[in-house]
Image (cartoon, rainbow, N blue to C red):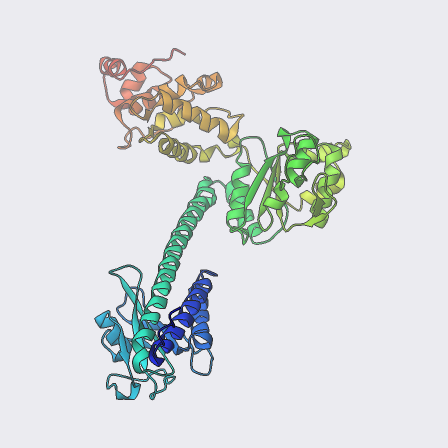
Length: 519
């Protein structure tokens, strides 16, 4: 058996140092993998190096965004205390700046012998060595400088510098990951803010068209009630825009960052309605294969819109009343009481007062819902808004069809004769049909008729219209039709209004494709 060759003292010290460095390097990698909070993680690495790696007074400097300057991002002094300092270095300034400029490691046996040392942080021991290494996130991109002081130099200084380079490589990968995450987070936040602006624009006041006194009162009510958590009951015929008002209240309230959750109460029987609103536990009924949150939980911190509230049964009304009064409920099949912070907006087209009188709707629930009533006027009560509504809807339909649409005044005049029992919803459906049948995107009177407007409108077309025939915005076809309307469809009279001869107007009627009405 051959005796082992005795190691020199220096080789033995280097071996011990390498073993300690490998152990410390492993611990550093564990610290860096614990969190994406970069400042907190780097501070923990500096503490670890101070306590176990024999590298004191560590600082990590990183490049500032859109600036060539280095800023001290994390620091730890010789006393083991975290040092907070808003110190910056330009490239080439001091030893730290020189490391950045050269993009190479600088190791100094005695700090006081280095004339470029600035000592801005006031934490370094001038009698100890100094090691500064660059931090890279890839082979070419340098993002900072890592600095520390070993307790002694000598022959082991280069070994200690190589160790600090390995730590800096790990730090560089953490910086790269942190910046990637921050970039993705900013992109998501920008997308979120963009979507919020789009939703606010789509569901804010701009999406509700109306200049009549009735609509101005609605807008003022919405602005006032949006500030508070008051329960709102929106009343009105179908198609008058009750959901639009609910959206406007939510997106102009302090709850705008919370969810806007809606449910049509008329669409579900009691057992499904209870599960939809309150949620259910796993196994609560056949098919309940997992726990499910209900609409009240989904709307916590936001707004719950209950459409067609007048359709719920008396039995379910009692369950709903408790949630409105206490803000508490249990999931179907559960025993734990859940508490939520939800603003409720309800809507109905039914006469709840009459139903209360007939004991078909609970009086206590009616008063709980009817804290702030908002009555939506029908379209026939604000017919003056119809031209603006028609143009708004045509623009919306055009965006959906990805083409330019326009509507002529003659078509709008025809629309204004209709009774609109279906209100704005019926108007939108009529205009969408008209847009489909318009090849060139221009919607005129004849296309509105082809879209299936109620015959009641045709009976009223003979009513003379006070249209300025000299209006330069009227095209020739609209001008001829307006003159015919004012003349009761007597061509000779219409010709006089236009300064034409009967033969000229007959030619215009033929070439413009105007269908003559005989009354």
